[in-house]
Length: 566
Image 1: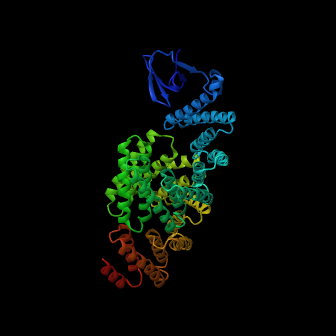
Image 2: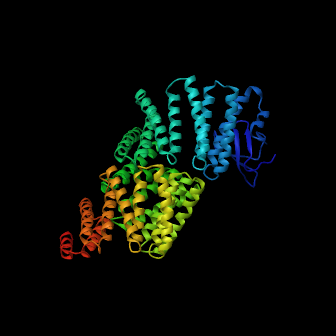
Image 3: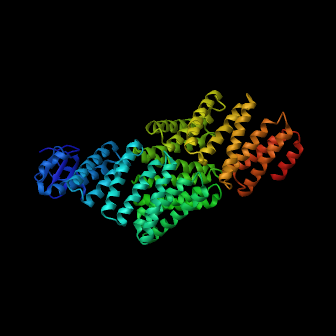
């Protein structure tokens, strides 16, 4: 009997196995769900080759053992899918699908068997997970099938366990909608949260339910982060509180640690624009955990991803105070993301993260090495376009593509203004689409405001009237952002820039009007510097304001203000 890679076999004692490799000496490397990778000698007497390991394979099973054989076959297929999931997601999906088909046969044989129904619901979840990025419509179908079964389960066996499974379905569907329809996503996550809180109230010491509640708080935070950041921070604090409690119970539990690292990072994100030093402390805590996880499992792409995020976060807090150190952090993040892609080349989320790293490196090199920066941006753009082609309605990928278009526009602004305008207009098309999907999303609004400022600057000399319209639209959005999040320093800076840009249009025609606009911007900039005296961008904004004021009717007072400040 001869075997090939990919053959499915049955061992008399080890059960169903997948041939991983055939050595020159005839020994087989076989994956078994019970034992993992096993080396089988040249004696094949204990092996049976399953020519068609699907439903036709049932022919070799005696009728009394059919259900047990089916269960073994289905769970083995799921295990095989796990084994090749990183390197070959297409093949993995095929294994998961075959496992699902057999699970459905099991349920057909024993319709009232709750164990089989539970297993089938997990099979649907796995299929949803496989399809969520590439085919969200199909993923929704799988998740809803899983929910349907779980609702049947709770009717058969009311209880906390099945209620917990329903909350998992709600979260899965909510996750699916996060980048498609935020209103729908929030509704599903609220339903999941309601159950999660109920379960913890019933069983306060159940760590599974505690972790589920922590995750629900996290999802609610992401739902509100751009529309109600104050509320979002409260959700994230609740998530963090539970995550820290779980780690205190089991300090070396990697699952709990992998929840805590993103919690620290998210708190850093929330505080970065209000309290950079506090944000740095959050990020350092996240980095410490990420390094611990990678040390425990060096090849785990999820933990490597945590580490890359931590490096990027450290770059964000250093970028305005120590650009050289920031570039070092970003470069370390990029190196890890390239390593992750080598492990999981088809993972779209990791490819998106890699595109983001290329953009970060381009930002760092834009002024010191524009040729290199352009290469970074082009690499990021290539990935961003591929991802949007795969999932046209995914807001995360659309936003990544907008960022790439904007980066290319910045590179061409002075070298080729006509081409730059084309890049910016492509970005506008995407941003307006995103704002239409989520009108109160502060991230999208901020970027739309930035676009209007950029367009105003491009039209300032050739078409001042059009430039004024661009600037006024930017100002309108900046004021809306401040109303949504009054203490956000980034939005305050946008408002200051809008005032200064409008003032620059009046320098020659109406110096008094120009000065009024400049003074509005100056007041905000001086307040920002009082909060962060060493912030390079704020100091640069202050210099620009004084320079602009020196060009209008009262240069002596402008110079005296400059002397007083510096």
